[in-house]
Image (tube, rainbow, N blue to C red):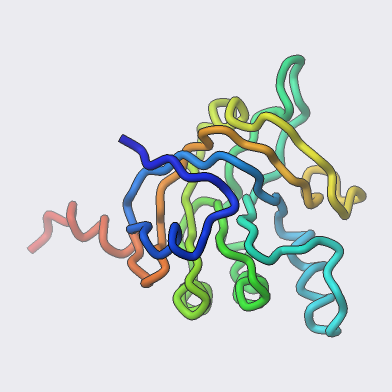
Length: 184
């Protein structure tokens, strides 16, 4: 049975999450992909303020398709997270509490997750239409010129994902394959 959590997550919520747990997130989260992350990172490097407050937020790596009637967004599957690895540590150091994407993260990101007591969730690739059903509202925040890669705020209800890397650095991309390795 998945664990139900309300966003924003408290430090205690994050501390109690364990890699491999299934969760359903409800509340609000930010969105953004490569181009938006690059712009945010450039502002950080210049010492300038960001156009959106990331403190305590979760960001979903997504570029949604256009919405069909009756839906807030179109299919909204996760983007490969490695594309944000260059930028993620700086955002985590500024107060971002977590990320949602797909695929493994590099050592620098994992170190920043542990250092800041954060979490990385994996959403299921190929489930874009199902995920879109959990997104109830979309609000444009900044970088509208980037189209699907703009930063938005999603209001979600029972958004399905898995704790991929917990705040202690436990990582399903390392532990799970070992369970199924049949070579001696």
